[in-house]
Image (cartoon, rainbow, N blue to C red; front, side, top):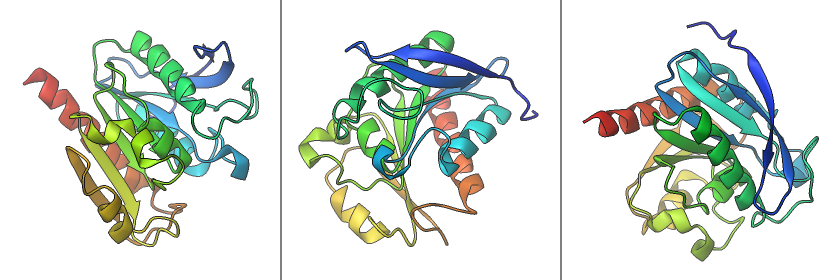
Length: 216
């Protein structure tokens, strides 16, 4: 499947009324759907950051619907930065929009860095699982990472040389999490330059496993 699937611009509305800029790519007959959450807004993060952009390109080419959005206060989105807590409402808005477009397939939330921590703070019945890419695991308090104790599967993709949360630290911090797998992205640092294809493949496998669970 080619990567020339058209980009649909759309607007999300969070429960507190904040409007968010978003884009969606929908292949024909998708086998899964992935909501992409970007890195820290106060450090230049947006839906056009490297990993988010590459997943938005690669996943639809592999047959997965993808939606990316800008958190509140970023580029064309309304509102102001909420320290990771108000942004949970943004993730819920993205889940709703993507679930409406792909209601018959498993929906996975894939957040990178700040987006990973915010994503796993959200528990929503429409989520099949979480992919947490280079999660700092310190944007929010451990008690706020509510998905950590949720029985649904979580995949931690931790760069081998992550400057903020290396594999040993991530393993310790997630040791009490339920249904959690940690995979090390070899040769990568937190920013994953040159390793985005490996990340995309891991996300694809995770979504495929969720689809197999649903059909089985």
